[in-house]
Amino acid sequence: MKSKIKFQSCISKDSVNFLDVTVRISKNRIVTSVYSKPTDAHLYLHKKSCHPHHVIKNIPKGQFIRVRRICSNIEDFNVHAETMKKNFVARGYDPRNLDQVIKIVRKMNRKDLLQDKLRPTKEGNSVLVCTWHPKLRNMSSILKENYNILNADIKLNKIFKERSTVAFRKNRTLGNQLCRNDIKKKKEDQMDEKCTGCKLCRIIGKRDTLINPQNGAKVEVKPGSSCKTIGIIYAVHCKKCKQIYIGHTGESMSKRWSKHKYDIINRPLQNELATHCHKDHDLEKDLEVHILDHGITLLAERERMEDKFICMLQTHQRRLKFRSSSIW
Ligand SMILES: [Zn+2]
Ligand SMILES: [Zn+2]
Image 1 (cartoon, rainbow, N blue to C red):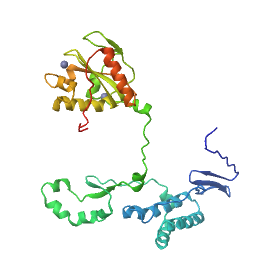
Image 2: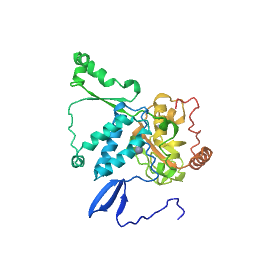
Image 3: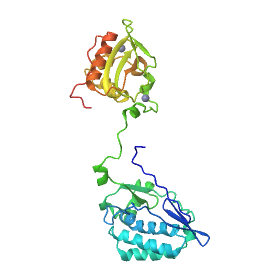
Image 4: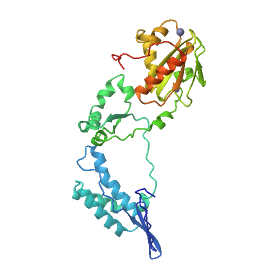
């Protein structure tokens, strides 16, 4: 196995680690306490991180409650809570506050903590969702203080029947800006992207050959494409006038088709297809689209293939090029 993954087997007669729990047998009873891997750096959210105050405030409490739940002995809780406190202090938290939280959590009944909590749902309460910014810190209290203004307005009092709660959605972080978290899909995956049903799909031809009705010239159609397939050579067939136009794009047919539609309606001089279809044509009834070839990422190769199809079908057209001044 060339992988860098290492397997390690741990065998013990009296204890075993599983996820964040150590299970051991003590005096013929099963005892649980907290386990963390030696590599765990305990990098809790830093106290000075640009998060809403309540988020930072609640992290230690949530973590100490987790320890309280896991540790079946209060002695174990004391040991692990002390270690955890040190880790939080290293992340900028105030040791006196942490001591208070530990005191509160120690007094909690472990049995109650192990029960599922049923949260009451506040029905009919509107939620004002804003993207988090430190300047919005007082949003909730400002709303509360000025609720009478909202209530006095005929339109707004219908929306804010009761005092609304403020919720924050996460803003872009430095991490988001410095590294991408959406790994670019592989070409194969993009080609498999399915369409959820669009107007274009209704006019995409399903045959495995395309025949030019003007002269009977025939070409094979490469199977396995959809309106989402990228790097394509396509043919637009006007069934009404028996004309065929060949084009290519590095994008998908659905993207290119919306540009074609825009040109046909608004910029008839943009290309031959737009000129042809601008008047007296019903795009859905009169036109048929065929994806002749696909998965060609290189522009030069697409141009070569486009020329080849124009030659084979003898359409005698100019390329369906878009002018560089195009708004797209
Ligand atoms: Zn589609
Ligand atoms: Zn036509």
